[in-house]
Length: 83
Image (cartoon, rainbow, N blue to C red; front, side):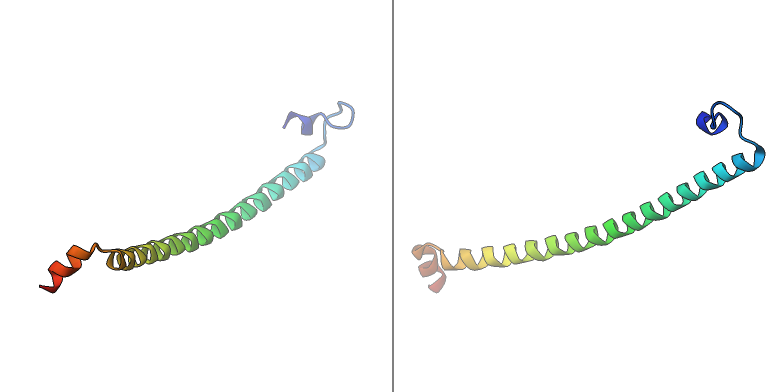
């Protein structure tokens, strides 16, 4: 920040130049904040989507595991269930 006060070869900025520099800095910070908020919101949407995908895949894994268990049961267990 000290650079603002000693620009132009070491001469002090006048009040108008200082105000312009601070206004620009303020606008840059506001722009950066808006951009970071947008990024945060996008990441939140992507996270929610990923969590839904994970939940769906976990359900599918459970269903497929049950189907696999039914198909690969040992013969004696199947016979015992039939009695």
